[in-house]
Picture (tube, rainbow, N blue to C red):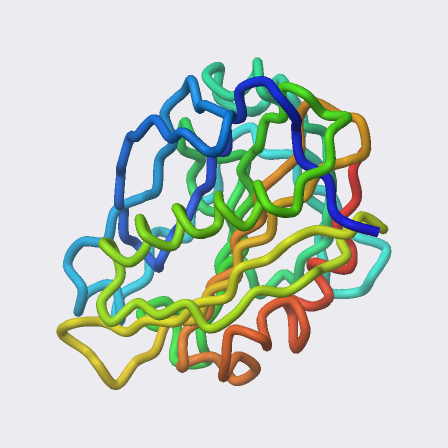
Length: 251
């Protein structure tokens, strides 16, 4: 069963990538086949490469984020609540929930993603090992299926990422199942220019609930400082990111 994307209307895919404390912002209108984007996409920028490899962001949690105790010991539950997300995201709101270990910290919200959480290595806050972020994707014709369109979008996304990550390389694509929905993923790796011994591994998953106008883009990133992540394939398959992804549910 192929994964589903919007049809003959405009398609907007907003994807958030957070590599430790970096911010890469780009805004570009993309034309994909007969689909034409009508809004701006943004990717958070990569700055101060060595500091990103060695120093993590603030661990303070954003006021208003919906965190609840999980039924699983040592875990919390995040619930995406419309009133708690930035006003700029409310028109594109998607209700979802996932569980995450208490070893992950909710990061301060931005105007371009619903949530991101981050885990540090045993060495502490100065050493980021994994993060998990959720943005949104809009499908103006949600009833049309198009694997080719997804692949074209991933091609264009890869070109943008190549300009923001040092030694960026796409290593493959795969089908991923999220909340029972077959979805498409792109896997990549890179390193830090000023700390080339530290690898960055990434997996981007676009998830479109059947016949819904809005879905999500899930970004998982890990570094070689992580005990569980030694390749892009490990993200969402091994360790904590696997449990987080398995717990993800649309509401």
